[in-house]
Length: 193
Length: 192
Image 1 (cartoon, rainbow over the protein chains, first blue to last red):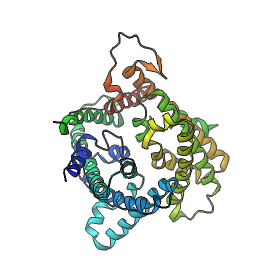
Image 2 (cartoon, rainbow over the protein chains, first blue to last red):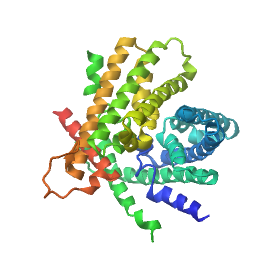
Image 3 (cartoon, rainbow over the protein chains, first blue to last red):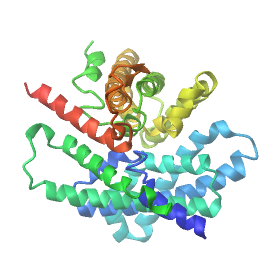
Image 4 (cartoon, chains in turn red, yellow):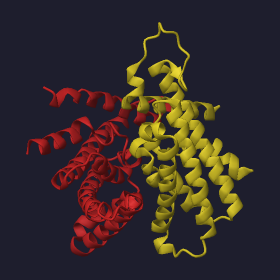
């Protein structure tokens, strides 16, 4: 139980997928303009990431390892993620039109979100067990959502600031992300104490 | 010629389109890492563009993204095995970011926006231009970070021992800051 809590906290605050591993930067820069859309994107990523780490763990340990098919790992993972996203989209559209309206446009984008594939690869390289992988996927998604929401909040305020012309748009967003990464560095010692 | 030069400057993948951000920010702690990531991307982009351009009339539109992703994943697997066998140190440094080339939006973007609609030769020129543009972007970014954070470029000491290295430059925060200032600089040059 203690190990799971350590994974949970460190994945959200210390080894945040966005700020420490640069995964999912494209949606992070693209969607973080508005709070509402950031929330939708964050929820969609959390949902898919939890499912994809779970399924990738099962396939990797029950199929690829016993049959010594390690070289197929990347192809299999990306196929699992792409079809999972497609299935989730169809499922949500059929059973919850309200949720579909909220998440709909973000779902297809998730296939090429490197955080999802990155989480699956980390889960393998860190030798997580089944429960650990599920917790890791879930907390990875939550960490992504947290940073996305903080960033969206800052950017909504930034709209009223007088930013020098050459820094408008991407540059100021990147610099804000840099400062945010520095702030998150402060969490490094959290679990040592 | 236009297909080739576009990626080098006017539609530079990193500084103008802000594509492929994960490897750009993650592996640019040293110039060697930046260059090897660039080489890997050129290889994958070149051969994926070739195959996608050749198959453009065969692939049904509904499943094209899935097909492109599998083609890209196959070439990335090749590069990964090659790096592990011949340059294991670099392979270790790049870690998960080498397989993450699969979801690099530059490659999928060029396949979807260009190679799937254009003849083979044009697609290859476009792929080479974009790949080289990406590589010099990585090299510039990683040289600045290595110089300020470690006093060296490509392992050669440039700054005197009296200079105190800015550790922050090789930490994640330094990557965001350096890229932010570089994009602003590119905007400034463009405005002239």
